[in-house]
Length: 62
Image (tube, rainbow, N blue to C red; front, side, top):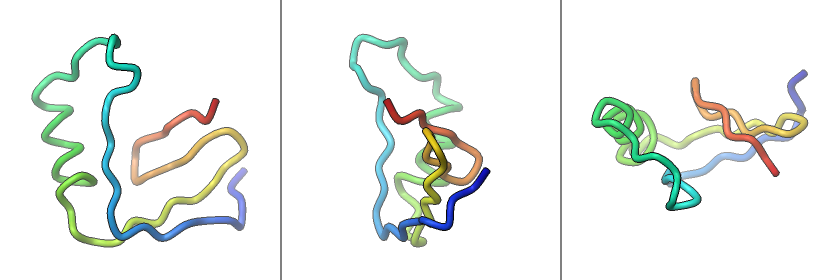
């Protein structure tokens, strides 16, 4: 279920955390750079119950 709460961010940068997790392959890095990290378009960040959704990527909130 989507919430009515969302954020508009001018800059978003996605990175691996914690740093001891497996490295991302080149395809994943390129996809993140093209869609998020180096894309100048504002990003809408809807807040779901325990998740942020950014385009097709989902990030759990702990």
